[in-house]
Length: 122
Image (cartoon, rainbow, N blue to C red; front, side):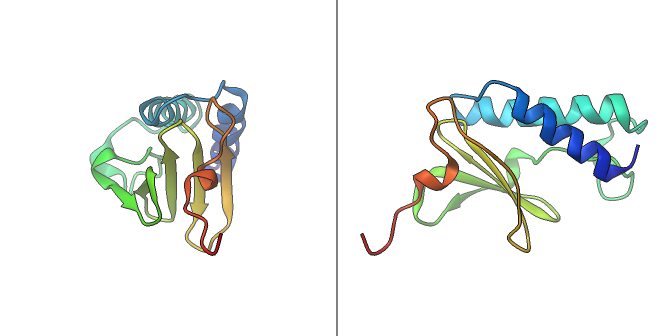
């Protein structure tokens, strides 16, 4: 299956799951779901050291987590072609480097990642 088709399946499954309630819950949901899609549909074994060349999609790594300006409740996980934002309430937002939003899922309390940013001028 093509990478774009696997990615679409990942997004579909993520949106079908109940929303997470914590950062750790959101991160675990994202990682578990992506790994399940890749295990089932890619035909490429899980070998994280080959992430750059093997063609498999891998979840972001916690060692790439960074603080986000204007929000103490959101962490950014940098990947090659996108950023994944996860809020303390489990909300997830995946944004391509060109600003296109690929996935936006609220946390269990209904709030989205953008709800955690300081609003300027208000």
